[in-house]
Length: 147
Image (cartoon, rainbow, N blue to C red; front, top):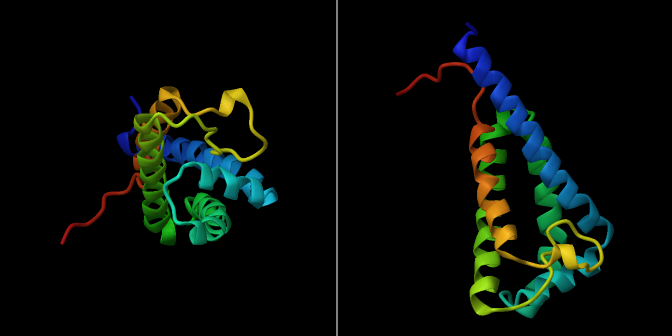
């Protein structure tokens, strides 16, 4: 039988790799085409116009830095907090669009518009499901000392 701490380490590393891959895959196309991403943000009809380009610049940078920081033990908890906050914000935005009946593309992974990127209940479920591996990213297999 394997050591439980070893299993936790393997699960945590797998979760970090998965979450980092998702957030890097989301960030890179947005960084390559910030104007399209700004238009995607505008289409959500949830932000003031003056903030659209600022968000289009900041969100992918946060996604990329936080994804890479998942592998740096000193800043991992902060990276997990940022990624969880981003995912929760994405969940709220997607739910808002679905409930308001707005038919737009997600823009989650940048790029030009296509039918596969349209917001749907599947998009919401995907982001909700991502919360589980995000939570697992913080574990390192060692016992943390309480106060």
